[in-house]
Figure 1 (cartoon, rainbow, N blue to C red):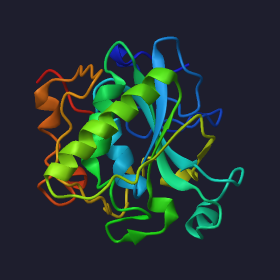
Figure 2: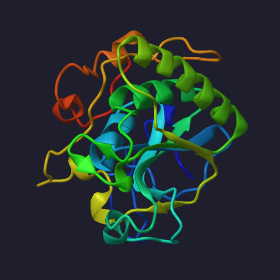
Figure 3: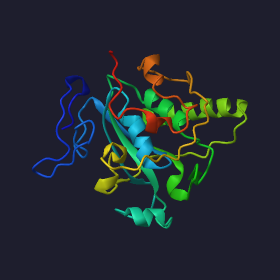
Length: 240
């Protein structure tokens, strides 16, 4: 099973038994959750940069990229890009619930892209780039809806349009091909990210229970173009 993040226990990206492991965190990608862990699925445009943003957060156990929200079982990347399967590119995030809250993940989600762009994100166009959140329990859904309402008010005050993020519960998640997993941390990867952050920050919405200190969010400067690409691949350290 996935290690507790506090232990610092990691493995190697490829095991002799074929187990897939996270290129940066070393954790297994397909392990069952432990009792103190949760998962959620986010769509924020191209999944390469989005995944890196989430794997850097302290308390995150594992991330992977895949496809969700469509009608076809086990779609391929080419099928998803055709727009005919209805899937969007997503990031599955597994985290230690004593360490961080889903509120922290929602803060990164809403701030790291423009959730008002419909079937696109920046230069990437098509339904596979739409904004989406797929929850796995009732509390997650409650906080997603509360954060959406708070963020819509903040966006409107800043002159932005209506949020188009698809929000649903318990949608099937299909792992993307191995070469997409933690793509930006792989040797020879192309530093690409199409996310278009609005610069609007998520505040204390109803039910928020932020755990991460302000210094963590200092590593994400949305005023800098493609700031996720410019950041280190390693997880953000809570202690210097």
